[in-house]
Length: 277
Image 1 (cartoon, rainbow, N blue to C red):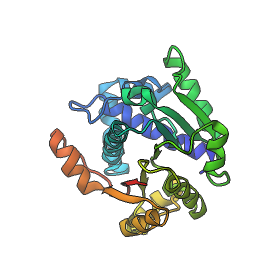
Image 2: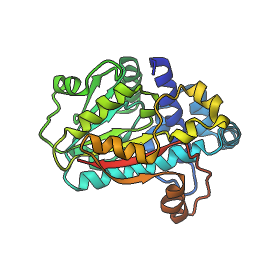
Image 3: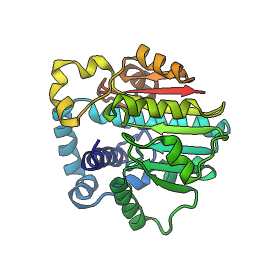
Image 4: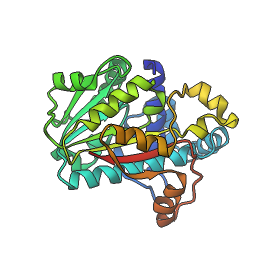
């Protein structure tokens, strides 16, 4: 994905996480999401009337998109906590965008974290963080990367990431924008990590991408890679990764929304796979 498209995607997800903080029973705690916003989005998120109007317009334009983003955020938060509680002390965030987990989750403060993204996206992220943090956290490092041309092994080796430590690899809302070769590069890296490592990624089901009802979104969002659950399991297994969970709209309703007493539509266009080495 080009830098402009990546920045828009990252910003959009950040806005939805900020909006969720104003829900009566938010699914996760992200005090930074709203503080990182500027301009009209910051005004909109801070104003109850504008928030309501925006969410109604968003639901008309993309039914269930908001629910999908906030549910995947909660599901990935839970997967991170589980991995870190299990002894993982190194985290690699591929296509980090405006992800705030290294700064808002106490569990991550004990880990060494590498954020990987396009240089322009990282520059915007770091400038935003500089506005709201008194000093940059010492446990976070940044490595510029172009996933379509760079090998993750090489990028992370230059950045000082170890290959012998159990590692948590996060890849949220990235895979669907990558060509097949870049996807294989990511899975090869994750599968080559030592036992006890974990990969958490979101992916676009093939039947959703190919549905004529979503053709407009497919063009606007430049979806590329799509895999159905059996396919993603085979791809992961081919790289030495075993799927432990594969979560979609139904699982989000059952495991996240109903226990929280929340009623949200969840778009079926993104699933979250959790796999171990």
